Image (cartoon, rainbow, N blue to C red):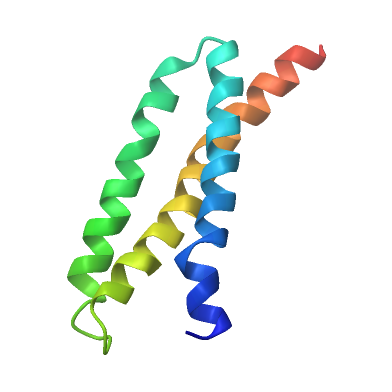
Length: 93
């Protein structure tokens, strides 16, 4: 296993999921529960999309799921970030 496979297998997605959980906790403090509850939907969408689109193109189809998890971590954080920034702006006033 080379470093690229190792990066996408564990530490990179964990980093993004940790930031997503932290952002979700901050949103919960400000009473925005729906956004935190809908965030895992992006994980499912990314995993399904990766399985459908990438699995047939890669030599090892299971690698598509690893890419799907990596993409899901980024998408989940990007989904929560605007609301988190709005909440932080309200707090600073």
